[in-house]
Image (tube, rainbow, N blue to C red; front, side, top):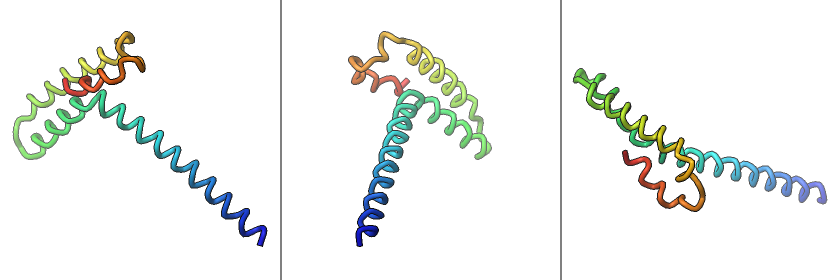
Length: 94
């Protein structure tokens, strides 16, 4: 009986560690999407237009512009701190 409870505790510990790892990955994914959201959106739009047989050069050019803005925002160390975290919500909306 004692062995049974020990196994349950180990299973619970493993599940907790798994949940923490998944949460950290989710936070990282949200941060990347926030920073590069416009770039990814414009690239996917350009690809979809090209696959459909239309000219996607405008969307691809917009993706390049958004990528430049995202790079500049990532390099701006004055804005990238916890004290300015709320102001970074506009970064992905280039």
